[in-house]
Image 1 (cartoon, rainbow, N blue to C red):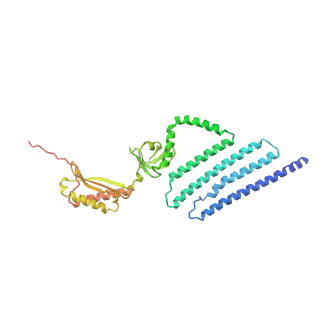
Image 2: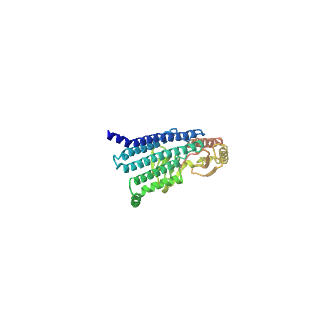
Length: 357
């Protein structure tokens, strides 16, 4: 009984201190949740919420885990160390507490990053400006990489690893690795330059000059860019290729061009001038043709079997489907003008001279 009485007297202060820590844990959790909920409610009053619907839950998870794990570790510290049940627990407690703080802080930082990216996207949406997915993706990847590197370095330092020596060794190894994997680094650098120079964006139609790669950009990564061909096959293009070859961005064209040559018979030479004049008038009256661009209709040359008229103009629309329809209307209009003047479109002919001798 004396032993039990002495143990209770000795542990009474520890029990009270433990109870106070439990109350403090609950209080901190409630306060943190209250603050986050107030921030969310305040944002909802503005036009267009920039916060995710599960904003409160996503941020509370790492905060709640960190508060409870750190608090419970302090409880363990009190009952084990203060009661002198195991003196070696003190050093382990310090490392465990620091690791919990590092992991939960990194978790919280990633959740905040996701929220900021979401807010950035929503802000562009509400302002009427199309969200720049490539830029948002680049910022997201850079922030994620930075957070992970910092978390690893701080964790290693907490575990007693000498960071200076590790960085020195990494520098020497990096030089060796650079020679062995120069193509890999070239692709990563190419991906970085793509995000800086922005020759194309996600959704753009691009193609190389040799036309071996043509399609719509689906994803711009740090190492590869995925382009979806018009036959729905994907092209996985190393980013270094874009710095060594010329790439055409067809989406950024200002107009689409109509260019063709129409040949009429040599017998219709007497009406070629009014035909050219009427074609010019037809193009000027067409509301889908851009008058601010070059518009040329001329008798070009005496062909082998036709009198060739060249038509060169631009449409206002850049959409391929609409351009095809406008081009068809122009071609049909040209044919009707030729018929109106009693002329005919020429076709390749050959004249055979027979010697009767």
